[in-house]
Image (cartoon, rainbow, N blue to C red):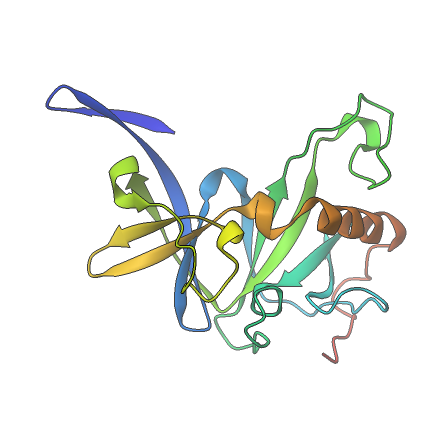
Length: 195
């Protein structure tokens, strides 16, 4: 976060990656974003929740990819030319190096899990001040209120600012950690995705 002083007052600001999903504009704190990838074929893994579309091979590691549209109960993301996978890193409180918490997140002291988020399109990075943010609405946003950290005013519209740690809850982290630990990395681009 950065702090800017205007007329003697200090306001906190942060940068957010904006993206589109089912015609709605969303934002994630850039702090969580590791990289942005063009859509690539996913390896489907059986017996996982529907919102986990599969895994990708990211530099020799299997990274689970979730479909936010399914997670938000808003249909399925249709893969098109601008479909993108946003790789986010979710940090959790983690046991000491070498210990495990049953999720596969603490291998060698690693603190967190990389997860791919499937979205319709990535738009741009914006800087939002505290004054741009309003509290999450109790209803009417089309997704669970606890997934939203706030609503940001942008021109004549709003961005739904997501709370990544809530969208990917602890129980989901356990599932995703086990998936990443048990699934061998897919072989290049030879994987298939019938979903």
